[in-house]
Image (cartoon, rainbow, N blue to C red; front, side, top):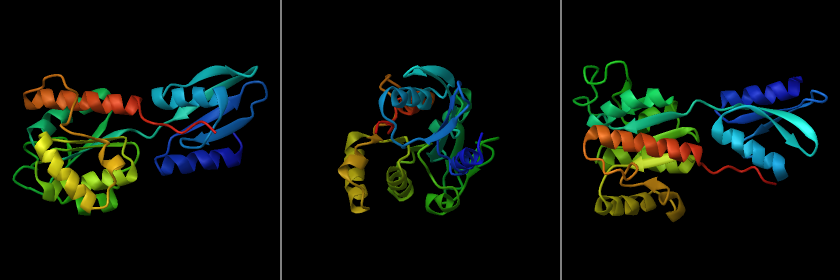
Length: 231
């Protein structure tokens, strides 16, 4: 791989951006394409497939054999709220391949005893996200029911384009949340991305079932996320 391509790929890794290395098997010419860069035609379609699947493979495009090697940032989940749903989600997320962090300033809930072995931060989201910012490969789930804790990270997740944003609460609760997020500068289109009530509609009732429905919705959002590949 030429130095220019390697530099571009390493920069993408450092900034948690997805990239595909396209190698022409006839002459070993290499091109690095970042997610969001426009690529027209059949190659754009094939690159979109590997960005979504995360699986490398060989494709035929206009008589050329190309090997597409995809490099995706590890997807992660940030949960706002150290509640019973979070306890179940913390056990389920690693099984599906997601790193998980829980943030909650309420030290009565965010304890090592309740979340042994979990990346748990007992602090306000506003302070935590300064050093651990959200990005497009992060799913955010807000489950505290407390606007003072949930609203800022929800707004931030919409602003930076997290691939999934979900919030616990009834439709009445969410309607009030919508108004607050508008006052924080979020647009109708951005707010429309919030999954509320959180989780796929599987009739979930217990905290464990809500966690399962939430994880399923996160996986669905990740595999069906919007991509820009066509020029």
